Amino acid sequence: MRQKQKKVGLRMEKIIVCGQNPLRGTVRVQGAKNAALPILAACVLVSGVSTIENCPDLSDVRAAVAILKRLGCAVKRSGHTLTVDSRFVSCYTIPNELMREMRSSIVFLGSVLARTGKAVLCAPGGCAIGRRPIDLHLSALRALGAQIEEQNGVLCCRANRLCGAVVALPFPSVGATENALLAAAVANGDTLICGAAKEPEIDDLVLFLNRCGAKITRTERGDLFVRGTPWLHGCRHRVMPDRIAALTVMAAVGAAGGNVMLQDAVPGHLTAALGVFCKAGCLLETGERTLRIAAEGRLNAVPFLQTRPHPGFPTDGQAAVMAMLCTAEGRTAVEETIFENRFHHVAALRQMGARIRVSGRRAEVEGVPCLHGAAVAACDLRAGGALVVAGLGARGTTVIRGVRHIDRGYEKIETCFKTLGAQIERSADSGPEQPQSE
Ligand code: UD1
Image 1: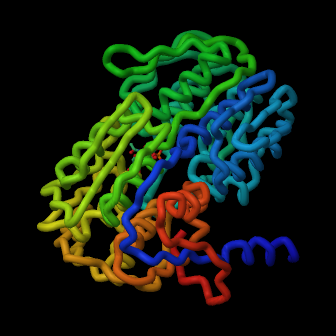
Image 2 (image 1 turned 90 degrees about the vertical axis):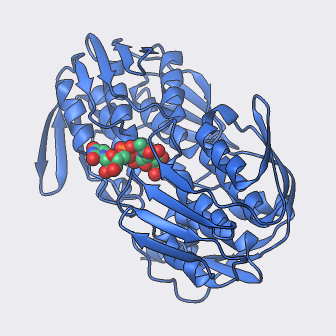
């Protein structure tokens, strides 16, 4: 009971932003959540010790660590470095409460099954942004020889021996690609994952696995060829920079104005997004691992913005860029092609004065000269990032609740923007938490 109270108590925080201070200075981009989580799941395959550097301190990462510990791994954190000793994996069951903490928990299915020959777990949690089925994950694992049954919402999976096969993905699902890769890395024989996702986080997972002794290459067509190896050893790996965190800072500069240097940002991961910022009138300067963005005055609307699998514009950046374009001159049409229900941020942006009409997967944003502060609530992770962007550009004070969603993917978001001169604080919130969908 005491623990439950403590957990609820932790959630009661708010972020208070006084907007319209131009952002200036240099900021280092955090390690990528969406690379760190599958890499931590991959540690289960390793019969040894893995050292993962640049691992952001996020609630989703803490949830992955809790799963690793439950499975029998010893995990230590020192700053941004996690050491995972997975020599003695002793368990193949992941309890419901750990599975429901986040969507990425489903990627443990492939690695637990491959390591132990069994896996018992329920459907994953995560942001409420659409149906998010796992049929592609299951059919990929079945193609590799897994037997999977569902009983009362629990997946019972078995594979005495995973065997290489052709895995054809009808959609380049990031999670299904990761699950197929993890299982195929230690399967008996060769696997070709056709239609694999091309997100940079997949390539970071491949890099980690190859450093552990796996043999994975990307073909010219973008498929993944995996030569199965019987066992993997530990390695040292540095998680790639977070392209969505970088994009959120860029959107904030677009909204509030200013001139910011992002260090540890990889422009090559952000090509589609950079095009959008250029069209909006931001000035960009790119280096190999740096990105400078400057913006002044009112931006231009971008006629059409469509989310697509990589290398298209990322669905995770849609909310933050929409928040930036709420005050651009003209009308922007946004089409969300990845998830059917990813406009939860629109209601809060409207509370701040935005003019947005939503119809199915399309949103029409009619730029207004200025947003105003309001009391709003983040109802999912990227919606939360978008509200911080909106608040930084808005006149007056914005109070953002639902901070626990933001903490799933942004490490100390207020510190990042404070460094750049924003007036932003986190404080305890004694008021009632706003109703949220999760
Ligand atoms: C997706 C995003 C990823 C983002 C993450 C968190 C894409 C392609 N993927 O990854 O960039 O970081 O959300 O926001 O942009 N689907 C199925 N069956 C499945 C799996 C997925 O139908 O078994 C569908 C989903 O309903 C969705 C689409 O495929 O419409 C994207 O799914 P997927 O890439 O698997 O999602 P994530 O791995 O969560």
